[in-house]
Amino acid sequence: MKSLPIVWQRLVDPEGNTCGRCGNTHESVLAAVEALKEILKPLDVAPILETREIDSESFRVDPSQSNRIWIAGKPIEEWLDAKVSSSCCDTVCEGAHCRTLEIGDRTFEVIPPGMVIKAALIAASKMVDSAKRAGGCACDTGCCTHRHSPF
Image (cartoon, rainbow, N blue to C red; front, top):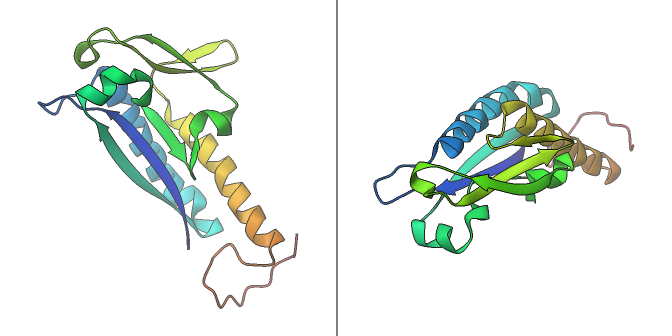
């Protein structure tokens, strides 16, 4: 089974707190990963979530690094053709202008599960297409007996 890496990072203060924006995105990412486990199973692809913490000092240098998501090594905004922007954030972010995503005329402070799922499906489809074009199998067993089209 091929792995689809999903990385999410956010600010965590010395007391272990994060802002509401990041807390809600965390819930979205968890829900998306659970849904993706079932959705991607027929493709023999498994989502693997890694969460990273940014300390307060690193956050002050670059607040846009908080609440970032990468899927298969690319930022989510690349998969979704979204634009990165920012807006004022609360609590532990102390009024910093934190990351948002813009798609069309909508701005998202919290990344909804559907956006994570959509980006992951696009990434997974590229993985499967690449394996088929290379004459390999998307299941990545090394000794596949499945019959696949070369395209």
